[in-house]
Image 1 (cartoon, rainbow, N blue to C red):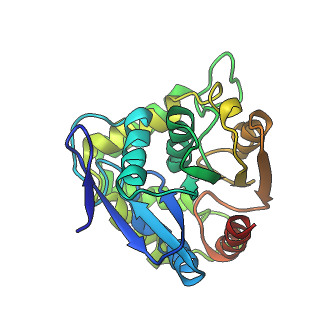
Image 2 (cartoon, helix red, strand yellow):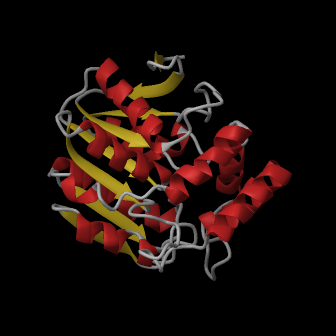
Length: 273
């Protein structure tokens, strides 16, 4: 399997399809790079080089005990860009992956990257604080950790309902898509999965967003039950110097159905132009 080895000896698996301008994808929790296959196929079929990796602790990457935080996630992403000598990159991050992309851009700069996409992403901050009263209380994330530790298989099965909006009237999400989510989740090491909850919920990106000086498309469904719209995309766009907001009415957190098709068109258009 193609991997790169980080400075702290973690093997990061990646897939690399096509040729041309690189579009690099960062996945959400608790998934793997495979969740991006449709978008990777789209990009590679349209003359781009599509790359996606499994986050440390996830999928085919090393299930290490340490380093499950945004700094390490961003450094791992940077290691891929450096090892493959990528330039003129478009970064695409969903959910936790959007935090990873944001931290990469603030921590490593934009010398290799010219555009980015943040989809249903966790910035600026998911956790409720005095400065962020619209956020989710810490008890929400404590409950996630407790349910995950008690029965991770059942937890991932149950999580697909909110993730894909399967509890909404008119939902067309297939059982097979929900099963795929479960399968990817079961490939994540338990410690990595638990620590990632802290990383995506408690990391505050507020001070980082204003220093990112490239065009960024911020897309978000307004019926997202995982990363609530009101505390995410509008705030992120207000902080970005070159942020562009795209709202997907009625869309859930995870890509599926008509929402996925609309996002695919937006992604291709954003990369082209």
